[in-house]
Amino acid sequence: MTETPPTLTPIEVQRFADIASRLTANVASVVLGKPQVVTLALAGLFAEGHLLLEDVPGVGKTTLARAIAASVRGEWRRIQFTPDLLPSDVTGVTIFNQATRQFEFHGGPVFANIVVADEINRASPKTQSALLEVMEERGVTVDGRRHAVPRPFLVVATQNPVEMDGTYRLPEAQLDRFLMKLSIGYPDEQVEVQVLKGAAAGRSPDYLGAVTDTETVAAMIRLTHRVYVADPLYAYAVRLAAATREHKQVRVGVSPRGVIALSRAAQAYALMQGRPYVVPEDIKALVEPVFAHRLLLAPDATMRGVTATEVLRGVLESVPTPTPARS
Image (tube, rainbow, N blue to C red; front, side, top):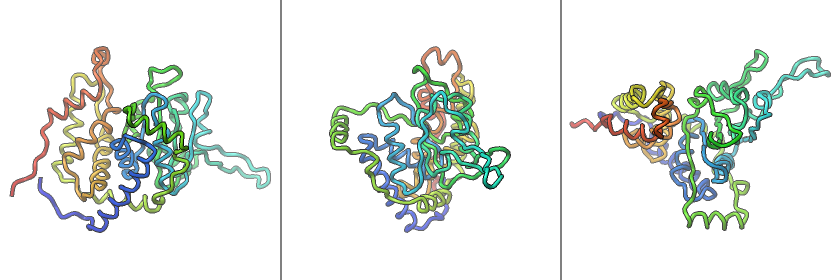
């Protein structure tokens, strides 16, 4: 791979990495023993993507979402998704004002910088679809009028496994709008002891101080767009996606939106590591969280217990990794 001079100055790179490091430490102080999950979640924030946290109840999904929200000095709201939640409860509604004799729009909880959508797959598919427009276009249309949400805008959704009672599978169109899908998992024994001690001491996201503000986060998001990606790495991302589409165990592979998501996440991830350019290892680290939830496996593969993670590991082994060009 040939490299061009980075478009970011060393001062910009260092400042970004310093703030990202402090944010990571702040969130990790309440989300114990999961440093990589925290790092990936913050990479999603800097890429201005949306995060889907899937795991069994009680492992810290909502804690991670709330910790990210508390670490950024901006408006955040939480939506508890239930079977009786209506789309208007999410986006807002137009109400007739008797005093002014005019219709006025009253925005819903999506009008915030960070929206925590708790147990998103407990709501009906109709209510889930209320998030489709705002997640993609950063605005909602009510009664023919479009209303923009604040920027930066991040949806952090949590969901329980679809096999659990009272849950609905998220439609593929909505899954594709999440930049990454992460799983926290159970803590090991030592970490769980620390969790218990923290709970006994009252340690929670409610007591986290803000590390930065939304203006700084918005500036950091703009910096990630200037991270250099060499042409061979763009081609590498496209070949990885193409391999999923041609895989015999996959019915629907990664869409072009997924490839864009991978490159954006790689730019943010690289800058968090203090580099103004992307390397192949960045892409490899992000393939599973960015691609896995976008794959729709063939029925026979599902019956045999094949997982998207296994498919992607095979894809990474089959697609050659770009190597630096020799001078």
